[in-house]
Picture 1 (cartoon, rainbow, N blue to C red):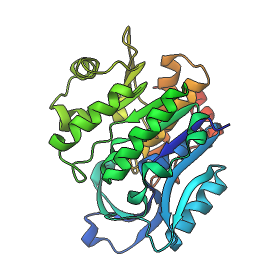
Picture 2: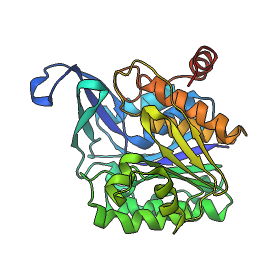
Picture 3: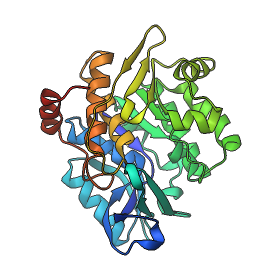
Picture 4: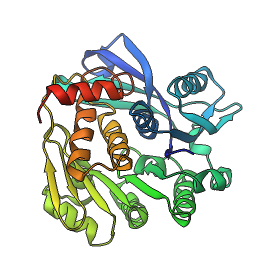
Length: 313
């Protein structure tokens, strides 16, 4: 039985090796990315049984993803290889202070062609947690419909739906995104939203107002506000827990929020308290910022446990 499955778009990553605008950098390090793929890799590295649902092209990049997921022990029985399709790519330019900027080449990718009819209801009915994101919904109309259909199946069979807002204005405008994001949040058991998401969608910067805004239309079991290096704020509707982050040498923040989500889900499945889950997820997110790229720095369980023994928030 798969503990956690996610749906979305995997993307091959080309990360600059020097700080500067993309036009000024000559050497890039090839890796892997895509928020829900990063998420499921974190889940697998932290010890849970993981599966991924998507389409990839039958190109070399698609093959590299299948090899990656197999090496991580991720179930790929629900991955469709599209003949003649291509796997999306993106380039990361590194900014001073650990920030980054993205350039995407993803329009009409194989992943964007996934349709609700390609979902396997029997597979989804047996997962404990299904995870997706605003990015997965934004890449195409059929992918948006797929998320809604998958959630319907999972919830009907007693599974948990985890959703990361992950709003990207390059994919859709706030006006277009908000109704669909709020509609899917109504169905979510666990909602992840970053401060950046809240600012872009609602113009909110105060965590209390963000929580109040979400609870005004949705009733999840928990809302998690991701605050980067400042840690996270967790609300279960009754109490709010502010869990400070860890100070680390930040190299590249790509994928840290996705790895945080994966750690949070693993901690939840292991029965940790909300505070313990927050500490665990913050540690995983922090460690992911200490190397280049989205996937390579995602820590394995032993690395996280060693880090927690030696570090304090």
